[in-house]
Image (cartoon, rainbow, N blue to C red; front, side):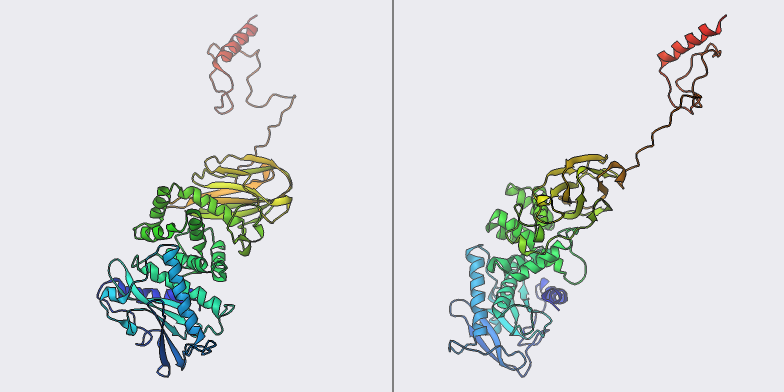
Amino acid sequence: MTREHLHAQLAGALLLACLVPGRARAERPTEGGLWSYDPKDILATYDHPDAPLRVHYSVDGPSVVPLADLDGDGVPDYVARVADTAVAVLALYRDDYDLRPPRSEAEHDLGPLGGSEALDIYLVDFAGAADGHFAHDACDPDACAGHLLLENDFAGYAYADDVEAIDTVVSHELFHAVQAAYLVDLPVWFSEGTAVWAERAYRPDSRDFLRLCDAYLADTGRSLYRPPAGPVPAFAYGTALWWDFLIDRHGPDLVDALLLAASAPDLPAALGDLLRAREHDLRLAWLEFAAWNLATGPRAGAREGHAFAAALTGIVAEQDGDSLADDDRFFPLSARYYRLDHAGGPLWFALAEPAPGLEFSLQAVAGGQADGPVEPAELAWDGADPAPRILAELPAGGYWLAVVNPVLADMSIPAHLCAASSREALACADPVPEPMATTTDDPPAGDDPPLDTDAGDDPPSDTDACNGCRTTSPALAWLLVLLRRRRARP
């Protein structure tokens, strides 16, 4: 079980326990609770000399930490590294991003929990079920105080070493502590996405950040702010890619602004307002973000994109071939990608019905290759006009079609789209009508009678024997009458 699954299990019980003032606080590992020390654990504490921070750990028992003490200061090196990392992470959040510090239990009149008013970190054995957690001690209507739990040794985990593990989990969980200083409750796609962003803020080469961004890229057809239901999914963590994109664009002061905006009842709408206040439109930002996401993994390198684009796995095509046809719904703040093998010449595109609000773009694979780094968009258009049309005369090679819904809305946009190298191959468009056959022998049924037939005195109507179809203009009809009368006289 990963950190994602643990958060899902704890979210209900621990958060509900503190949302209403006066509710019971989460038990600490020394008191019992879900992750508690064993009676066999012999506990010790370490207070960091430069910050109000205390680490609780076991020197013997099931939660024993690695006891190596190479510098001989009497504190296990593992414990000292946890404390030093936490202090460095909090300094980064304070100095580089001007964020609020985690709240102390003293601000909620709880007394010195953990033996002091310092921020407490408990090193416990999660037995592989998770690797870290931030738990709330108390909340008022505006914010919460709490404590951290961290894996006691990371034995058997997928991190390269203890340094990577501590950097990753401490920066992530401490960002939850910072979030709690702003707001009691946050939507999971924001709280976990920004906490994963914080991992990279502290450690730019974070592999956990890249892994979770890949989880987002695997499901870009889903709305950013509507992760799958059930246990907290990797998708919610992977929204870190969007937050990294925005913060890279707007600078470090955006992080505080985002946390302040998160108190709005409608966070996606508040995000749009925040960007407008910074002279940046959410629609344009999302279109650029979607283009950057295509230029990842094997498609990175031929255009501007994420600084770490080549380290990502990259987009998986919805469809792949010499033509495409898709009939689906496209959700707000989402994107889908299709790869085309084009033999050269005209590329046709059509929609079965207008799809206003959808934005389309076509990007060529560099060097005429079937797949690989993509170039900046050659063409861009919207879904207002569904008519079959030639997008362009294009050289042979691979192309990627991006379909983006870049706006906030209550409803998705249905669209049946298709692209092919010929008009006849468009699966979403009506077939081209067959040309009518002609002959010089007998006149087709329904033609005017011969001119030497007495047509009577009444002028012909605008319709004739072809079941109501219009055949002549009124002026021509009168001329025919005169001709018929003249030829009918002796």
